[in-house]
Amino acid sequence: MLGKAVYDSRVDFRVGPETGRCAARGRSGPGSNEWERWRQTAEKEADPALAAAMQAIEALPGARRWLDAIFGNSPFLTRLALRDPGIVASVLEHGPDHNLG
Image 1: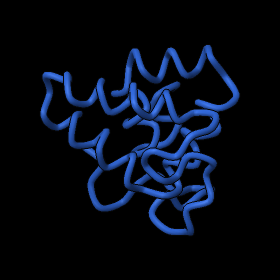
Image 2: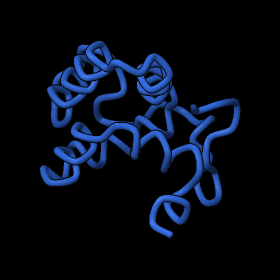
Image 3: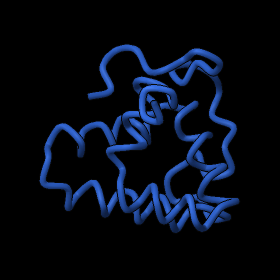
Image 4: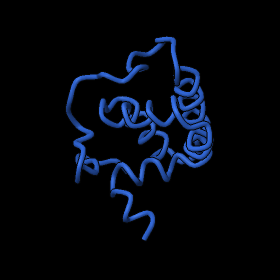
């Protein structure tokens, strides 16, 4: 899960400066509490591959920016992302069409 290439049809999630509001661990601001919940969810995840993917997502600047936007702007999407992080990983790896089609 989340191998070398991450879905990058429009956005390259592998490269770029960290510009998200909560890009640094421990940084306060919108979304910082959600990142803590993301880490707790990863720690409790029974599937080791998904837990590793969640940690990788946090380390990828583009993926972090994407989730920063969700965490900071949509309580509904935040709850969904935290409830089913496998979908988040799949969207980042394969793109949204793969998951919606």
